[in-house]
Image (cartoon, rainbow, N blue to C red; front, top):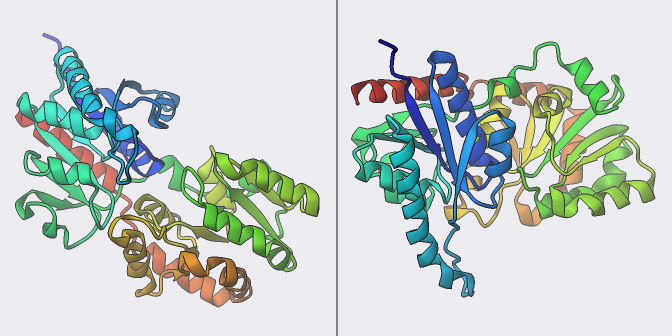
Amino acid sequence: MPQHKVKILISGGGTGGHIFPALAIANALKQKCDADILFVGALGRMEMKKIPEAGYQIEGLWISGFQRRITLKNILFPFKVIFSLTQALMIINRFKPDIAVGVGGYASGPALKVASKKGVPTVLQEQNSYPGITNKLLCKAANKICVAYEGMEKYFPKEKILITGNPVRKEIVDLKGKRKDALSYFQLNQEKTTLLVIGGSQGALSINESIRSNIELITSKDVQIIWQTGEKYYNTARNIIEQQKTPQIKVHAFIQRMDYAYAAADLVVSRAGAIAISELCAVKKPTIFVPLPHAAEDHQTKNAMALVKKNAALMVRDSDAKESIGNLIINLIEETKKRSLLATNIAKLAHLNAADVIADEILALAKKQ
């Protein structure tokens, strides 16, 4: 008699910070067993493109977040919730998962709510030091909650918490022997210092403007730059480098080969999202963090400060970035011992097996079911 394939539903998304951990978990599960994995995302969000590109099937729900400001979009919100719950019920009745995994984001709410009501065991994965509203709402019904930070019993039932760290994609953080190919990929000089600028999967306006204001200062030190701008700022950045004739700056709306970007980089400027931090710890890169100032409970600043206190990174506040980031970058370029110390210390904070630990927990619960 053929063995039953483990059926695993993974739901969530909205940003790379939710999507990429989900893919890391899915890849770990695939390595451990012959799993049948179905993703559930939100229609119109980036997971509807990124998940199929990674080779997985995804179904989309008509759902979005509730806007905190007064807007006509909120009129549709209750209808979207009802409709998405109905969609989720149909998907779960058809797919019949053995277990459901929520990684945060809009779609995670309806899918995990329906799954738990149907008696399907559920696992939550929370990336941040301050949890999103979806995971807060789902935590009481969850069987296990995998977290990256200590002190999460403030938000979740203590007995359900498992500290795993954040899962990172192995193909992203396996950089051995890639530097030469990476510099060729970006058409950069093998001998020059390389700065990587990343503002998250959708870019960051303040980081982009800060780099724009300091281009002449940074490039005066013969530095080359890989600059991920996001779609909205891409054309502006392209025009800037064409006008200033700075071919050593390579502008990308979105970087497909992040492993090459990390392999090429000697130092990094980044937002302080949980997944960005997890990846930077894993790839051992000296980093200047510019936390998103409007993140819930200012959790990005808390994320960054956890590293700064351990001399594992530098931080500049978003409001100060335009004025001070150029000098910070130059100082770090010139102080090779400081860069080496930051790289050593940030590496100590890496959780390289987080995806495997989470996958083992998922499979153990699925087996009980």
